[in-house]
Image (tube, rainbow, N blue to C red; front, side, top):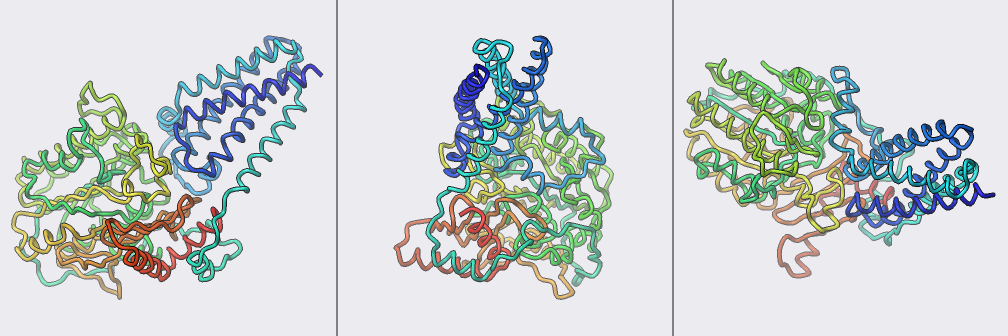
Length: 601
């Protein structure tokens, strides 16, 4: 009987302290639903699991054996709980849910390297130490209450089951808003089909040999085309020292900021690299089917048709979601990525960006003719690159500021390479973000929603900079700068490059994006989604942008409309209706919106 009361007392005490510890770790909760379901359920489950460890330890007569088992259980449970919390914080779901959606080929990356890279960056050491210490205190409390028979395994099991049942019950008791006419419309157009959720078609190598053809001989083509894709580089990002924006710092590092085209309203087509990256390389919209993605030519194919030496230089791994197979079909003269570099992983699945830029320097040094290169920088991927071959100022303490400094120095290095080679003036240079990232320091409910299902402007609006070549025809210069206040998107890059290179699509293909060397229509609608045919995700999100208007939908806020400025009620209602009608006509958006309501509302 004493062990029963001891078990209950220890579980309740641990639950209370774990509740406070979890709140301190997360700082802010991701949603009202998870706040209610997890604030009691998660601590109770963890506390009950540790009580079961105590119950098992109580079966051993030796106090030393009991202590060793409790210590091992405390460490393992602390690590598991920290992994669970990190997964919920950064990805919005528990690890097992994420595992079903993330496919990673680790053939060229050892398990120990992956573990050290991820666990070292994502698992908070103080949190795990506090958890282990808390469990040790729980053991001491149990000993004080009941002696060597300090815990009842049966009681702990009952409490564990109660914790799981309570957690599941709270999840199912979530608030469901009234079914609006708008939700009805999407549900009726997309009836639920048994067994079709979470099914995705994989990226693969595809024959694109007849996808494009060069037009008449183009004149005055730039000798160098450099496309820099910056992981998680949003429009709002500050410079490393916080004195200006990242965009302005990059422009200043170029030495001639006035030469650059800087649109005021640039958006991504996905909050996830798995969609945005293939889209940038092909011009396929995030809402388009995977067959279209595999038929459109790579931007490398466009360049090769004009005699360019082509290269894809990446700081990150290609061994996830079959991206290695996908790009293997591109007409590349050089492919460099984390797997082939031989360099250590330092941030997520990426190497130091300095190595990638050095590879670009080598490419330029070896090339006499025209060069087309895509450079992918990874420093700004969470949890942010904090160490580099580039010198980092001692005053930069937080990881994001250090990562921003690495990005700035990488751009300066790229500019210097082109200037020393006499290629800078004649080069077309583009620097964009594949998507934005959350600020991390804002007291705003939307700022706590995982980026992978968040189309707040922090994520939707991206870094977008273009330096045109010196001899760009005046008509193209005029059109480019005429689009400075129009809505542009990273899906526009492929048609823009095709326009400049004088290549056209064949076989009935067409770009969903717009060439920036032509006037962009004022009523143009840009589409973004976090899930599509080749990327399933547990929490889908969609966004439609038209000018400054936004229509977003996710599991936290269903079909939210923002006018982007002061408008009267009728104008706002009409704008919302028009964007809803546009979403209704796009199967990917229609399916995602229906899925969001069914699964999360």
